[in-house]
Length: 403
Image (cartoon, rainbow, N blue to C red; front, side, top):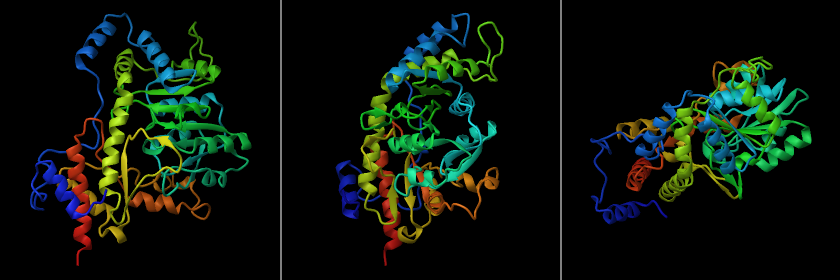
């Protein structure tokens, strides 16, 4: 669909709105449009289940967590799921349980927690560039960074778009490396018919409030390795054995029964929520897809994106205004946005010393990070809100390009 002025006028008329948006002197929305909102199940059902948990003699290591692990493993198509306190703690535990040493290759264009887990384990992150279309790190970028000190590849499914899992699996096998995935954004994402959890030694998902499945906070480690899952269940509970004899170094990374109940109640609604996110994302794409100087994340292979976030990338020279200026204008219109991920990890104070500027350059990451802006997207967002946001962005670009 074209985003010409005539198209937007017709959309507004069809929806019973004035032919033109409000003047620049008034915000587009009177109330703030949040970038995300938690997908929550029926409150009455939750209260009943919470009451049942609170009548138990324990709030951790109970039947709700076990039930969530079983249901999530079935949903994700893996043999084992281990519930933990967060995606970050899950990554920390997996990396330690696998005995990783030396260097781990990781994208620079990702959330800081991806690399934090490596530092907590005394591992050295080796940052690689991302693909300009998918925003994920691909096999070519990763293979160039492999050295004799490399012990693992830590891939990331950015914004829910699957990384090239088959190629990364082949690469890891060829170089005898462990393959892990930070799937914080990707619960419900698929590559072809396979859920992303089916690839790699383990994939760790987040259940925080902005994710497709919500537990308030929390994470799930998915794996087909039964021995790894057993070690993780022990290390999430301080490393204790059944007789309280610590066999491994662990920490308190347990998920509570209340969190598990919340996630269990939401699990049957995940697919419908992702369908809605994808539909709304397709509306953004149809309305903004031909806007000069603006592009969106694309995959070269058939997949299903969980659509945790909707990212646009602004080319200032072609769009007519910078990403920062667009962000400020949308804020004046009460539209919340986020600069995910700016600065990228190799530019952050904590990680600068890990990146050799005279070594592998990361030009795509540096360009993407200064142009990326995530727009409001969640399952409860009205379609009309998407139309109005897209209209505002397109109109700003047209205003800048007018003679």
